[in-house]
Image (cartoon, rainbow, N blue to C red; front, side):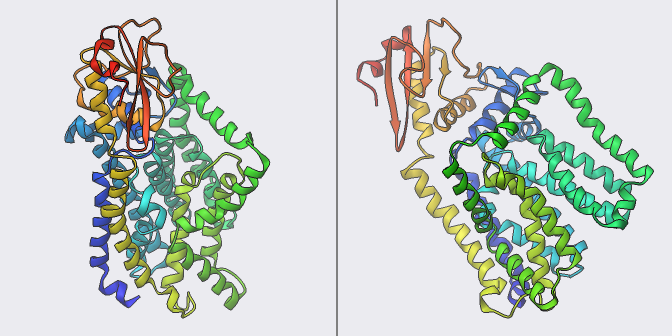
Amino acid sequence: MEKVERHYWSLLTLVLLAYGAALFHGYVGEEANYTIMSMEMWQRQVFRSVVALGGIGGRPPLYNWIMIPVARLVGWPHVLLAARLVTLGATFATALVLACWARDLWRHPWAARLAFLFYLLSADVLFYRGWLAYADPLFSFFMVLSAYGLWRAATQRNRMWWMLSWVAVFASYLTKVVTSYAFYGGVLLVLLMRAEYRAFFLSRRALVVAMLGILPMVLWMMVVGRQDALQVHWQMSDITTKLMTVDSFPHYLEKLAMFPVTFWLGLLPSALWATVGMLWQWKRRGVLSQENRSLLGMALVNVLPYWIAPQSAVRYVLPEYGFIILLAVGSCVAPDGLPPWRLLRPWPWLGGFACLGILVGWGAFPYYQQQVRGRNYEPMADQVEAAAGTAPIYTMDFSSVGLSVVSVIDSRHMDRPPIVVPPSGFTEGVVLAYTPTDVKGERQIKIEEQAESFYLVCRGAPCAAPVFHRGGH
């Protein structure tokens, strides 16, 4: 621990360098989903619901609300940078909330700094989840803040923290999905198991705060749900599908086996310290501390539904990472919290992960994008625009490839209508298609770059372009 304390600011500098690389990566996965929404919401001046490719509804819009002013600041051609800045801000803000929680929970002068580092240097957060331009990091930030608010409200019997926690959980819903309230309920359930906390939460004034806290959600459902029913119905349908749909029993058994393994590996090195620390405490004392029992309970009650659900992924439990981080910090700062094994010393793990993050972020991942996928969307967009000329561009390709190309093109031309699904009976334009049978046209070509491809179908004047007579690229 002495080396971590002595070299803390050097470690933090390495962390910043590792995350800074993400600002220069090309599109990854379905990041374009969110950038397309933000651009189209701004162009159409529709803000209470997300809009994309001419359609409306389906998701809450808070992530886009935050992304839009950032994109306007850095310029719409850099909308992916804006999305990544929002994501990184949320990731670092989550680390800061965990730092405050660890300081208050463990009462150790280094608890806050360790929690901040442990979260940012967790494998899944560092190498992927912490910078990917999805809504999950912002969703996770508000959920962790709501849990911290609940804990502060319980330990200090403070109704202001109780109200703040309700505001935070509503913000998490506005970011992504209504399951944020299930997470909130899980944390509250664990806290209610202690008599002194139960007395506070069930007091008359606290119940009034709870009724006021749930009111924004009710009003949102009444006002926005009435004009954007898909935002409510799609979420409920998606949750039901994930809970009830089993593709195949062998696949489900494999998922049950791999989910905890993937969760644990994604939380290295903190998962190692948390696991060994609890086992060590159990061996020495025969019981876990009250703090560890509460944190472990909060983690289990919120991870278990995703573990047993037939359709789920580890990225859905990003908010639960915080509980493991706090357990790890408790093990590291407590006297005799860990066995004296060289393997458990924090310095080699933290220093190694920070250096590995730099190597991956600035070396391996850019190389992968250059050779396999990621740097191909700009030249693909160039080919589409050259083939279309002044004719409209439409899309029927909703894969990550098609969405990324659409986002690149839209970000270049915020002064003209966005790319949408082709209207029925259109007579002129080009259409991005996932398969050659998605849309009928006069001619079609296959556009390929690196390991990815899509079809470009034309109708009308664009079919005279030479590219449609050379058999494609």
